[in-house]
Length: 168
Image 1 (cartoon, rainbow, N blue to C red):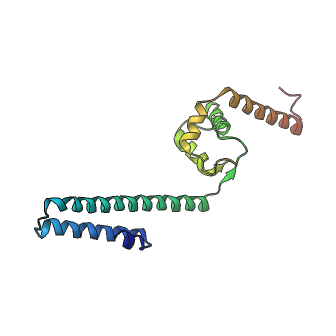
Image 2: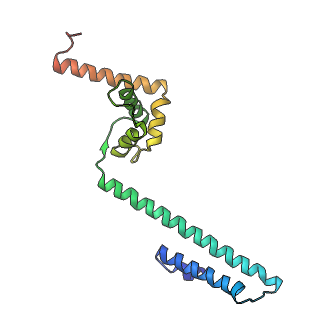
C-alpha cells in the first residue's frame, strides 16, 4: 500500500487514494458486518493508523506547498527593496517616525506589515511584520546607538549639501 501511494506523484491524488482506502477499510469492517477474530483487530487498527498518518502527512505537504507557492508569488509580484539596516535598527527607525508623527499611529500593524513586505535585508529575505514591530519597541542600547550614528550622518549630509550648518 505504501509503495502504491508513494508512486503517485500528485499530493491531491494521493489524498484521494488514501480516503478511498480508508473508506474501503471502514466498509469491510462496518458495512459488510464482517467480524474479525480478536487477534486480527490489531491489523485493522494498524492499517487505519497507517492511513490516517499518511493522510495527515499529505495534508501537511499540500499546506507547505501552497505556502511556498504563495510566498513565491508574493516575491514575484511585490516590488521589494534592499535596506542596509539590520532588522532591529529598521524597526526602531520606523518607530521613531511613528512617535514623531511622520507616520500615523493608526493601523500600526498594517504599517509594519507594509514595511516587512516591501523591504528585505542582506540577512533576511523575508521580514516578519510581528518581529519588525516587536523589535521596534524592544530596543537594545547598541541598536539605538548605531541608529543615532546613522541619523547624525544624515544630518551632516544635509548640512554639507544644503549649507544648513549656519541655520538653527
